[in-house]
Image (tube, rainbow, N blue to C red; front, side, top):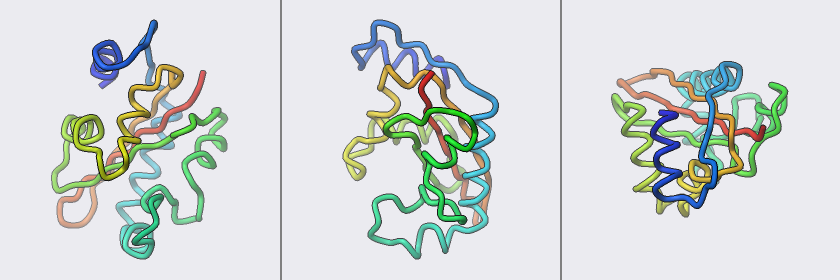
Length: 141
């Protein structure tokens, strides 16, 4: 995934230096949110219908910047991408964030292409009905 982000930043972005690195701790934060989504989908998604941030809320009311900051990082301006789908792979989630993101006004794509976002965490969890939840968190150096 890191190689894909670097390549996309080269091809589509305006990065002089498109590098990004995965951080294990930030990946743990992303995974914890994916697990939270998988366990609490009805509360976190369905109950917040109409809220553009639905799915970004944690069951404790936290938002991505709160979770990232609590982990000791400086959150990016658009600090999180999340996706869910039946048997969704990371490659499919990346494709959706990059090329099929009009519903979120291309915000997921913007986060991936932002050259200032140098640290990334990625996590997933499986839920009911073969749903797979993916979370990407972005932080500044």
